[in-house]
Image (cartoon, rainbow, N blue to C red; front, side, top):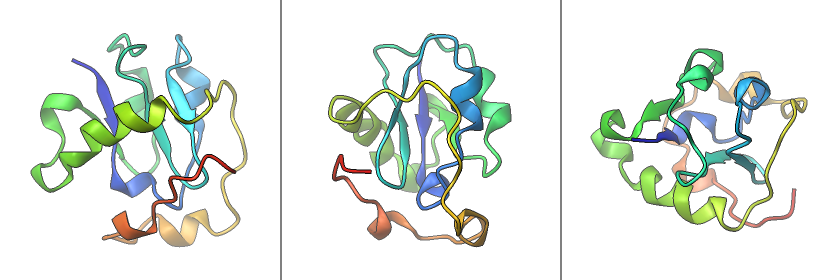
Amino acid sequence: MTYVVTEPCIRCRYTECVEVCPVDCFHAGPNFLVIDPAECIDCAVCVAQCPVEAIYPDDEVPAQQSDFIALNARLAQQWPVIKAHEPPPDDADAWAEVDDKRALLKESPTR
């Protein structure tokens, strides 16, 4: 089992989860974070730190977001590791309660 970052993280990109990760398995894109399944040690420490409840065990990802399992694995190979807390985007709080953000995901590695 591994953990997966899902749609609620898009445009929020809070990094409290990154601070507590003991193995640096998070990777950062322009407006989203992902977890590298090859590095995740399944400790679950990050789950409680996510203010938008975007992190799930891979076997509990909501069915409508199951594509995020493969998406995390793929983007983790493209995006740089993030090891420390960074400020969220200025408008993160406004996006925290928005649903259906999948189309807003930026996959370009440029921050």
